[in-house]
Image (cartoon, rainbow, N blue to C red; front, side):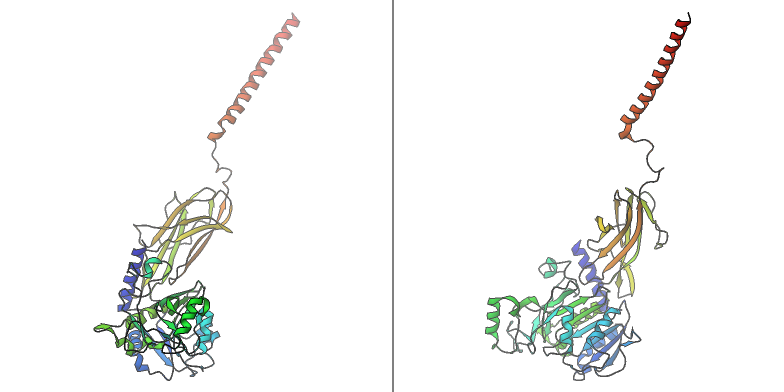
Length: 463
């Protein structure tokens, strides 16, 4: 089931790579550092425009176009290619970027080893930045390039030996299958314990963060490795690209180096005749950030007595508002996934392990929804209402890293049976019924015998 779920997501991801449209809008603001040449990133920007996005460019200190106007975001997505910028216009602050997320605007942010405003902002997302002016470097594999420019393998979601196989639910399949290694130049972060944060691309095991481009800092890394703890900035515990999804559904992607998106690294070969995976990787993370991939929604919810026919269609205005204790109930959720290639919502047939809770303060019943083979995208379960009256809720709360969170609550009243709702005779009460009947019959016989005996005594006295 898990492998089928990943395969479905990957097929949709590949179709999105061909022609993509965001589920939240196609207008993108690109805040580009004046030191960067827009033409050096033509493959990335051109790919977005080819997929239907409308890009608007602005320098960090420009005052127009405004990011937020009258508390309404002007763009659906914002890209910050300002890895070394220290000065911004008044409408670009850490507070305004956080406010953008609360308004459901998605962000793609690049950083660098230098200490900037974005370095401080990353801490708000439970990213622990490396020491200033300390890039990620590695001497393996042996190559003629400087150690600060290193190839990083991209985990394959369908490879049984990759980390996806060990953690299929904790690691979302953002990257396309068979993506080649990417060239990377930049910094790395340690990850905090925030459940909304997850790594997209980890640093290689043999890499480390150092303020020297050569081997001068190797002894410090060895000492840190022997001591352990927070002093160790090395290995796959670091992330060079990380994703963050807010509770409201907005998405943020952090990348430790802007050069990952450059034409130079996209054209650079990993091996003779083997192109790098930079173009595909950067498009995949942009697709996730802009809510093209792994986007779910609940089309509609229904519930009814198991003995009655289900409601037809998505009309939920006529759902029952009251049930009786011990009723047998059927709960159904219709879940769709966004298809960016056609900009439509299609039934999602491989949602892994969705659960529904029937709660009154605490969950009284927690059950897994199973997919209906005859109705695509329909997940259902049947259970018996608890023998307790009160106001209950059908709660569907589905949370998986990288996937859109699904939340639905439907309130119903569970009442005791009416006076005519109880069975007229209880089989367990037959002894009591027999006792009552025998007592009544015995009393009648006693009265008859007593009255007949009194009449005979009266006649004898008269004689």
